[in-house]
Image 1 (cartoon, rainbow, N blue to C red):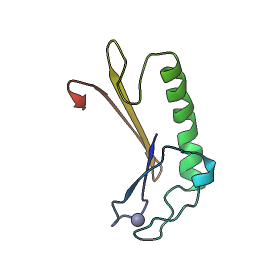
Image 2: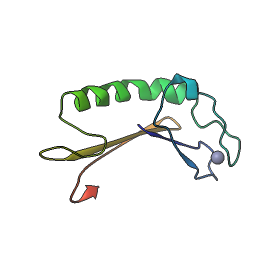
Image 3: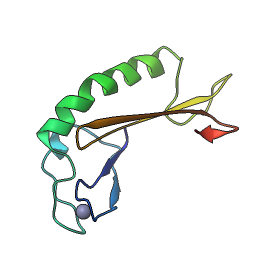
Image 4: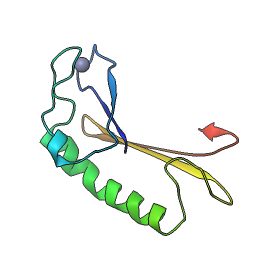
Length: 95
Ligand SMILES: [Zn+2]
């Protein structure tokens, strides 16, 4: 979870959020002004984010796939009530 995607249907703005956290709730999209992260999205995503942090800490997963014996990348995105999880390896990329 290191980026935010705009909630507006017609907007595809994606913003880097390396400092992802509750302080980003309600941050407006620079393109259309919609909220990039709603309280609901944040609450829904938090359990997944904590799980990812544990996996990364345990050395099971990496958010970049770097420095891993068998690199596996996990990409979790919470958007408009839907959680999308992409799991891929470095060679094949996310599938
Ligand atoms: Zn937008």
